[in-house]
Length: 157
Image 1 (cartoon, rainbow, N blue to C red):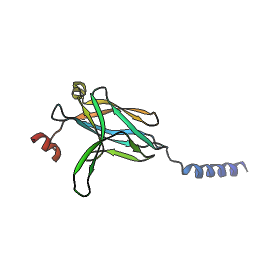
Image 2: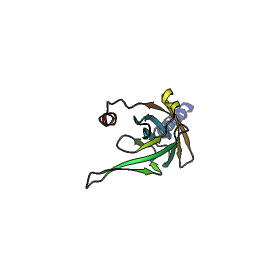
Image 3: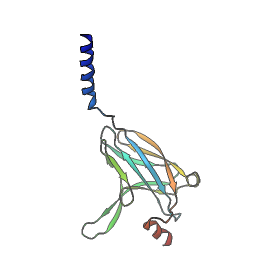
Image 4: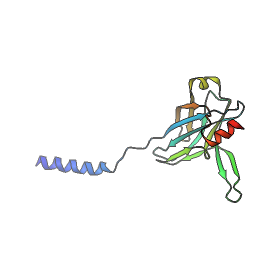
């Protein structure tokens, strides 16, 4: 009798827990800062934000190694094809979803990146979300190497 109850309980627990997956965690990954080849121009940071268990907004990205940091988005006018870039004050990060900050789309611009991350190859950044979560990330720092067609234009002028 006890064996049947144990077998039934184990089967019931397996069914109940089978639908439960790991709870998604809010995180920032794959962060890379590409330095501008022109000192006074901003550098661009790209990364992915993975949503946690609830919708949140990314409110700010900051770094003690940069003078100014802004979130931007690129849009293309459907009629004219004109490309524009504008600052964003917040970005929705849906629960359990990925939001990519990538070339040609959302990205972070950093002005005045100091010499320390340039020499170390990493820059410390802080991401602030609307649920008061702060995520510290060490982003890889890279120079423009000219392998991307847009980078080739920046190097050649």
